[in-house]
Length: 454
Image: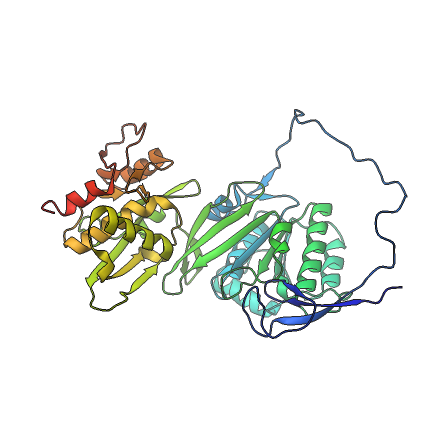
């Protein structure tokens, strides 16, 4: 029989090595590589000649029964999930420490329990008395939610198998669980993979909703093997800045709904409160527009969202001017600055540039290019944009302003909040929204607006 082969794996990214080393070449972390022993079977290569069972096949045109949804009682949570929980699904929730993951799940499970559903909350990081004190502080002490403090996977599965299956189970967190048949410490790649596989298989077999909390690395990715995100049905990231009270629940993977859907919450003394109209929170008083600001009409998933972009341009005598970006891609800012220099002749290469997205929101869509350019020009010329004006559009390297998707939804949201003018690329159909559109085809047209004598 072959001897067990020793391998070494990184606890953060799961990269496997044949020998130990201090630094992981994949994630550049130190002292995260540990030894793992993988059992090597003595069976010959290839499948045995024993026949397997026949797989039942279905036709593509057969009628499909939609999976029933269970509403959590928190509409913003249901929006991020794509309309609610699906029976037998596994949901992975990641986020920075202290961002509110446990609070959100405790509120969601308490709301389900108050509706008569059987819900269980297992915590490997807190005692049941700590969870009870938190529930009392949040006003949830009367919810018939079952609590447990356990880190053994075998004990958890035995408890859930004893009696009727609950509706939903929370595991907080997957990095604290351990399977006693795996010779590795909790939180390692082997333990996380095995525990997640057993929990997901149990959820599919019994039709239970399993919500798994995952720790994140310093880069913001969920710690453990990457296969963990492939195994679950839905991956949610809880984002936010400690300096702001707003929290964003973003779906990056969803087998039962759309991705990039967001739910917006506000952290208060009574827990997480839903924000039904986030555009009003991410906007300052748009009746008094200052130089260097522009209102961007963006789209997050299926939700239109208006947010203020702030820019500051200051002349610098340094050889390498400073570039500071908060809430946007720094590489995208460098591209916009290069286009404004090459196609608009603004000479921003000798200026310090500071860019900020108000409210702690992070924007990733390229439709914010034109709003960033407008904010930069407004700061450089010290002339504010007209009041009640929104800006959106994508800038190409040639200086052209390209059209973006969902123009109708952007204009509808702007109209609802009292905006009357939009600087935007030419669209095929804009409809009648009470907004006066000012279309721009090239960046030079926007430069002429701020620098008419150039």
